[in-house]
Image (cartoon, rainbow, N blue to C red; front, side, top):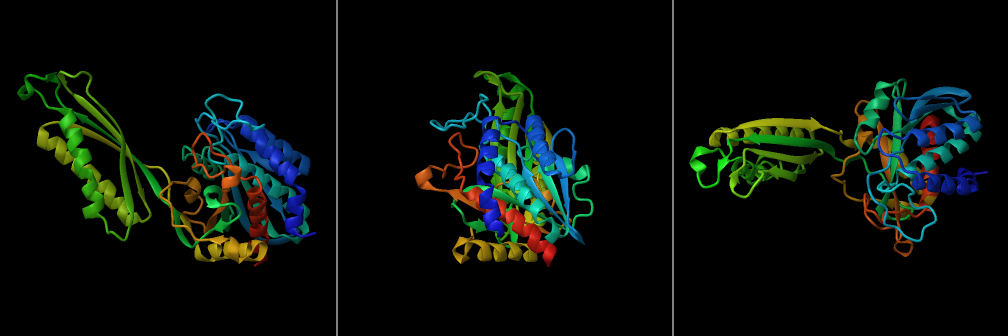
Length: 388
């Protein structure tokens, strides 16, 4: 029986498990019941695993032959999003929580792959390490798992993401950056409050904040090599308390997205410089918090080509997609910092099934037939990599 046939045989389980998770979403680092459900299925299969803290688990399938170790990862967390889908039998049963990014399908696909890999154990030349990861949406889970030994002894890593913006069933995995490094900026300008009619007695935090927002984009347009894409977005401003009171405090929050270390370093340096100079110019103070949240998801050439080879052989040349990289963040990049690997996108957008809504939207849903592609990719990548 081929891998494709083995995956197809598990379709009822694949769809059923995904729908159960979709009905019972759990937020980042709170995936307690999800972890229990995955563990229960691994117990049935006799696959050894160890629980990680606070949630998640790491399982292992050792082949009958010695060889390298490949890591397969699936994330499990949901989002604080109200589900807006109607008429489905499996909509979220928890108000204000929803699997609006497809992590329920990732978990189901990897677990289905485990069911097949157990049957192919005798053909494995090495070890498959299975990581069911919490907290991707808050960019904490990968680091937590790595600290607890997820990468120990691992030679190569592979992950995937269901992608509603690509046609259902296609696979994208080009060499090089695919997801950006994501940073978070928080700036607090402190001035001196006072009466709006007597501005000479005050230091206006609103002016400092406004000047910063207006000028900071020059960092992107004038300080960064245009061949190194970078995005700076100030998404939140809290300034002042009353219409006739000069603001004493202004707090800004934003995000920076980059693909190259040089651009990332320059943006951080210049943001600090701009904020300090503006505060000094107006006689105020500034506090700057800059946090690097995720690393670039950078597909190693040989690993990405392996994904393309598998796609070509398993689904046909027409299944290979080549979308542009996204400025979205993905904490799988932490697994790739010192270990080669690949991260694929599996298309699930089908207008007739109404599955083209963007990720993180309340109407997000997936074409469940696309999960057959993802589950097979997991299996084939492990088999092909270890068989090299």
